[in-house]
Length: 549
Image (cartoon, rainbow, N blue to C red):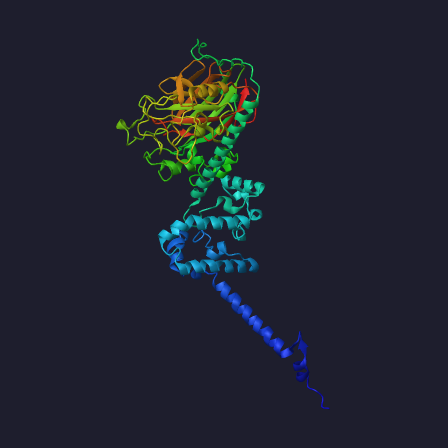
C-alpha cells in the first residue's frame, strides 16, 4: 500500500467530529464573524452614529456641545458612548440589546420633535440616573476615580464633597446631574419633597390617632402646674453696660472676608438646582467648610449681576476684608472690628443714590444659642428668606398678619421655626406665622437669633429675630466706632448674661455660631456684605477665639 501523504492524513483528522479542513473553515469564519460583529458594534459607539438621527442631533447634541465634556482646555472629549455605553464587552453587549427598544421608539416617532422630547425628558433622565446609580457611575469612573484625585489641587468645596462621597459611599451621579444636557433634576427634588410631605402628613395623622386613643384610655390627669414665667420685657432695664479698657494687641486676630450675597436666601441654599452644595448642607455640612476660602469670588459673581442678582449696583465692591478680635471678663464680651472704607457708588434705583443717608456704615452681629435648627450650619442665612424685602418672592404689599410687624411695608428676617409651614419650593412662608402663644414659648425657650447693631450715626441697638426682626436701643450692648483714615474701627461691649428675652447668655468654655454683616456706602436691607457661619469660642474651639482678660 502506498504511503499516505501528510496532507491526506491531516485532511482525515477529526476535531470534535469535524474534519480538520472543516474545523479550519469554522475557525477562520468565526474570527471573521467576530471581527465583523465587533467592528459593527464599535461603529455604533461613535459620536457620528449617535447623532445621525435628528432626534439626537437637534436636541441633546446641541446641549452637549456647550459643555466641558465636548470642548475643554485639555482637548479630551467624552462622546455619547463614553458616558452611556459600558467599556467591558459583556455589559456593552447588554446595553446594545437594550438599545433595540430605543430603535423601536425611533421608528414610532416617540420623541421626534423638541416638544415630544421635552415632555419625555424627565422620564428618560430618571432612567439614566437610576442606571448610573446602580452601576456606581461606572462610565464616569472610566475617567474619574477617587483614588486618582489629588485633593490638594481641588477647590475647597470640591475637596470637601469628594471626601463626603468617599466616606458615605456616594457616587458621581448623586451630585453631578444635568452636567451634559438640559438640567431637569429640580423636578426630582420637587418629587422627593412632595413624597416626603405626603409621608410626613400620613405619619402626623397616625400619631394624632394614636395620641387620641392613648388619651381616651388614660385616667384623668391631675391639674398641671403653671409654667415658669418668662423674664418680663417691660421691667426696669439695668444701667448701660460698661467694661474695662482692652489691650487689643494681646487679643488673637481672626481675618475673614465678608461678601455680597445678592438674592441667595435660605430657600436658595436648600434647592439643588440653585446651589450645588444643597446635598452636603442637608447632611450637616457647614457653609464655612466649603466656602470660607472663596467668598470674594462668590461676591464678585453676584455683585456683577451674573448670578442671583436682578438689580446690581454699578461699582459696588464684591467683598470686604474684616479683622475681628474678641476678649471677655467675668461680666462682658468685648469685640473689635476693623475693615477698609470704600468709595461711594450711587444707587441708580434710589432717589439721591443713598438708601440710608444718615448712616454711611452699619455693623451687625448675630448669635445663635443653639436652638435654631440651621443656624449652626448657615449662620444668618437661616433668617434670610426669598419672600423678604427686595427678594424674588417678596409680597408687593404685605397685609397685617398677627405676630409680625408689616407696618413699614415689607417683610423682615425670620427663623423657619416661627412658621406653621416652611415650603422651599413655593417660597411664600412669610404670612404662615404661628399663634402668639407658640411664639412666646419659642422665645422663652431660646429659639431665636440674638441680634445687635451699630449705626455710624451713633446708635447701638439690640434685639432678636424670631417671627420677624426686633431691634431697639438697649442697655445690654454698647458700640463705639469711627473712621480712622481709610478704615473703620468699631468696638463692642456686651453683657455675657441675658437680662431679657431675646438675648443669649454666653458661657465661658462654650462655642456659639455667629454671623456678621456690614452695610457700607449708605446701604440698607439685603444690599450688605455678610460672613459665612463662624464659631465664637470663649476659651473654646472656634474660628474666633475670645480669651479671658
